[in-house]
Length: 274
Image (spheres, helix red, strand yellow):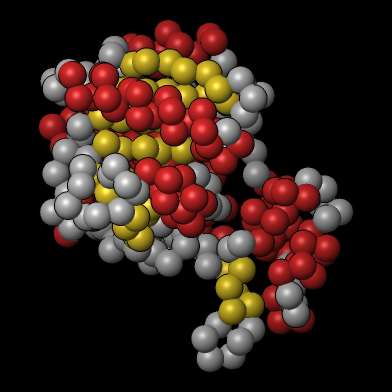
């Protein structure tokens, strides 16, 4: 399960804060983008250079047929090289968390510390089929606004906040002004079985500092997962933010920033990575 076995694409990213500061590199979740982390990145930008990345097939980054954790880890390696980012703290949420874990076990010497938000190194039951079907069925040619898209999606996706999140992926074509998907819907849909796999080999480990933050209202990381987390990440600190769901950094930004900065100031600053 090597990280550098595929052709990398050039990832788009925005940097918040002085690029000369210690780097934090943030990887978003499925159907998200670096913009989902803009508020948190601005909050942290007075202490760190926060690089909010768009993973392949998302946001402003290129589309590619290959989609899986080795490919995304290879993209991350090329991104770090291109921007001369040495020993960053990696922060990954959900799918981005699995990407960060994949990179850390494959290239531990390149990671100062690892933060994984509301995901565990385990396989998950497949999901998202209904949502992808609804998104792919949306007739973009007759669409006049994002709010209209949200209304059309409501029967299949009743959660208002989730619909709003999904339709952030609708952008207008610069020439035709018609709506198009920024994400590679077909490619991501085809890759779903791979993206729900564990993503790590049973014997793979990262011995550096690691922080796993889960939402108390989320079921993505259960107490029974703590054992497998520590098998792969023996120096992991496990934190629960009680009044947060899956999007911990959005639901409870104060608590998330406090846990993150506290961990960086103790576990990362005081204990060099192995």
